Amino acid sequence: MLELDLLLQPFVENEYEKLNREDKLRFEVLLEKDDQTLFQWFMKSCEPHDLNMKRIVDLIRDASIN
Image (tube, rainbow, N blue to C red; front, side, top):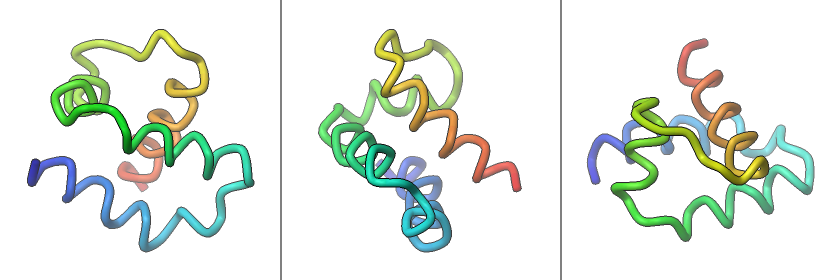
């Protein structure tokens, strides 16, 4: 999904290396989710129930604002 690419690519290029080991693992798990779920999370139409997913989604959202 192009919208996800536009959000995730800058995050990977600019922020991923700054993540701690646990957040990098969270990011890897996040990428296993389907595009529609990710889109809903990033557009805030729903929130992840899993606190690990919520953490990485919030980190990506915050990075896209800055």
